Image (cartoon, rainbow, N blue to C red):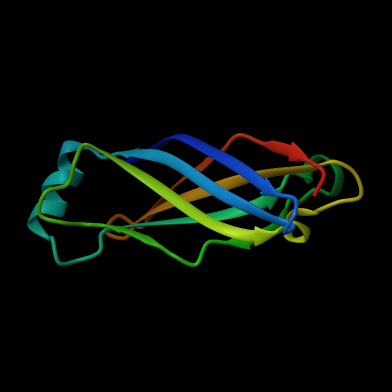
Length: 133
């Protein structure tokens, strides 16, 4: 099964404009069998990668706040898949979108890789970034 590794969330604030540049990076490692299937079925989307931002509140409320869903979806399936693929999601949001509670905010990204052939999902969370938004 493909695995997600090294998921890193970085937030760069532009205080003058009240904006935050959000970037999520990481890697996916595919097995030799998955690479072979992607080569053979290069015109079929076999893997889809999605990313969301959450407020880390489960300890307080029992559930994390769903803050933002990246609109772009990464699709993996081509004639020359690599054993390890890098990915990046990037966007600019208003600071208020990340203001998820009454104190210091704790934000993390959750990345999900959907294996459409096997019907499985691999999930990995990023680091938690704290700040006042």
